[in-house]
Amino acid sequence: MSAFIALLAQIGALCRKELLALLKEPSSRAILIAPALMQALLFGYGATYDLNHVAYAVLDQSRGRASTEILNRLDGTGVFERKRTLTSPRDIAKVIDDNDALMVISIPSDFENRLSANQSAPLQAILDGRNSTTAATAGAYLGNIVASYNQSLGHASGGISVERRAWFNPNLEARWNIMPALIAALSMLQTLLIASLSVAREREQGTFDQLLVTPMTPMQILVGKALPSIAVGLVQSTIIFLIIRFWFQIPLVGSAWLLYLGLFTFTVASVGIGLSISALSLTMQQAMLYTFFLIMPLMLLSGLLTPVRNMPVVLQLATYVNPLRFGMSIVRRVYLEGAGITDVATDFIPLLIIAAITLPLAAWLFRHRLA
Image 1 (cartoon, rainbow, N blue to C red):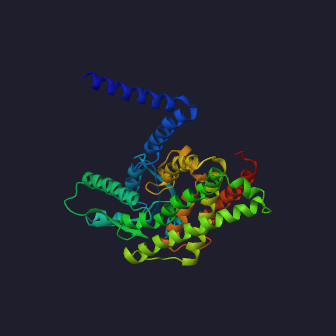
Image 2 (image 1 turned 90 degrees about the vertical axis):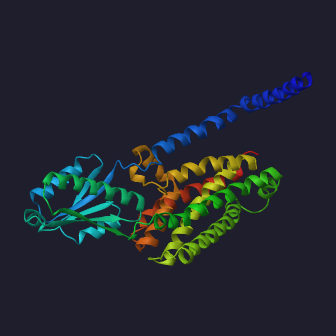
Image 3 (image 1 turned 45 degrees about the horizontal axis):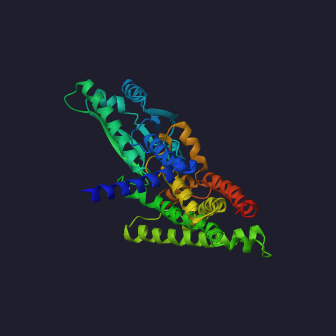
């Protein structure tokens, strides 16, 4: 029995030593608390499927009492926000294509007359299928509101029927929403890690100082470090793209060259962030820690699972420094929508700005970060 107690005392002493070593350093204490705190807040506010803000547009060609009542009930939920009131069916495509609205409600001119004649009055809901989960939920909310109104009519037959039509994803399959986005998301994981380890590895091995005294300039070193990571990212994106296209049979609607132009720009911006992390890190362990600490917020604030418009305003502003948000937007719009260069030009601008800041920053840190 005494031997067992002595064994427990030895194990307890070792545990105490490890805890003291872990809690002694301020940086270690921050690592224990900060990631859990940040990820809990991000999951709580950012990763939510609750609909609290649905932008919609309406084309009301009836302008009767029934259509007005339906729209008033829709606006009164506090969930739906009317962004546009259209005057022509030709305006519907632009509203959906430009992401101005998740849903367009089209009410025909004979809507009121059909209800008065106790006939079925169709109401068309055009949904943005690029975010299938949110679109399906919004369509279900609309269906509940219409069903409640039908009950208030008290008709034995007829009433309002909702005809749903999803653009860019006719069957609202979740796979069509998630898989194209993975072309950017999965490649970023490996690209960011490879880039972040490139300089830290040489610092740890003691060869980076030798590299700095060569005739090569910091910009040349930057290019030499960046190009392999960019190549790896594009190869991984290609592998994922081929699986999505030929195994899962999700058709590419847009241009392949524009898709790869967007992926190249996105990968350059991601590599810039990775090289900046690597230049700041003194060891490979630090680089991996910083990278894994950063990956989770980038994923949550990208719109991969939940739309950015459903996040709080503060988090929406934070997404502007996230290259994954704009890389996924380009891939989804080109792949599913068939968007052209003018349609996705606004997504290229933030990526170019991120690359223009992070790459020169990494080159400067190569020289001025003390080993």
